[in-house]
Image 1: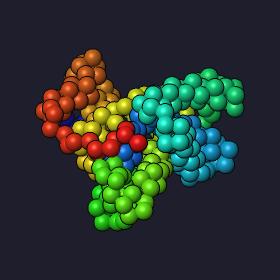
Image 2: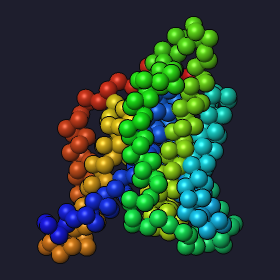
Image 3: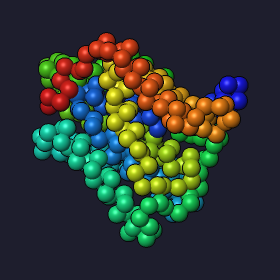
Length: 288
């Protein structure tokens, strides 16, 4: 097993964990404000595509990061317009955006690159996690968000919008304002997670989010809507995924069929152990 747990394995674990963790932290602060964030998958996928488009057109992976974050914010803008302005059902809005992302990114691939499955190769950060700014963003967010939620005016208003919106009204603050700010920050983080998917491999592949947004949302709920704890839960999922990959490329005598079960078995174990012990959702979640 010493052939499995190496520095290369640790780097791979971090690369895999970052998209999950950023999406989970983005979803956590959005939902803490009272907005159901079922569109994490769409933000990851559009973020991944935008990162490829920006990096390819500018020749800079850093521009790809900016593009991914802007795409996450743009998807969030549509989500907020439908949910807050049009008062559409937030679950339906999220599902619709996820479906649009699946077809929309394929359409854009065909329109821009005349390819239906993948983009051209783009500048990337590769396997080096130390110099990857998205990795540092994830670590900074995991430390800063819990502090901001309890120690800053922004965080206190965000939590009030999710739990006691009437208290904001009494001091002259519209609950929609902190919800918008929280969701936009969450969208930027999730878009950065999508950029990590692209910029770690040097190109966009259709449907490359692979359900990570849904898994991230499950970890948000499991963590009781606490962003740092959700990121840690995502690291557990990433560990299982990295372990699975490492077992398949290492000569450890374990059949590939068995190795492929590792992420799913670990997920089931975590859910079984946690049971219904996760925290209560924000009182106004989905009740705008």
